[in-house]
Amino acid sequence: MATSAEQVFAHIEETVKSTPSLKKKFPGILTLKLTDSPLLLTLNIPTLTTSRHPHPSPSLTIHLSSSTVLKIFNGELKPQAAFMKKVIKIEGKLGLAMKFQGIVMEVMKRMKSKM
Image (cartoon, rainbow, N blue to C red; front, side, top):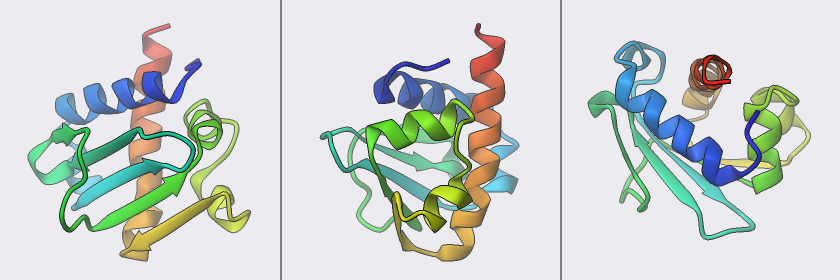
């Protein structure tokens, strides 16, 4: 179980860099931007790379709080429910937002295997 957004971001980076199958699950560039912290993570899924800097034109940007990151990646809140409750804001291709769940599931699986 992750205890900080930084820890979750580290798991996401590791998962993206080592999981080629994500290319099929999410064909784009995703930026996760925290609303209560300067933390930011950009995932370039087609190239399986990550960055702590903003991308000039991400396919999708998700704005969320640190506590929401923890709830989602610890399995306490599904991304779709977070969107419906308006605890995350989405900019960009809404269709890709639905595919974000695939990334979440892969990261959660790896987080559990590290315990």
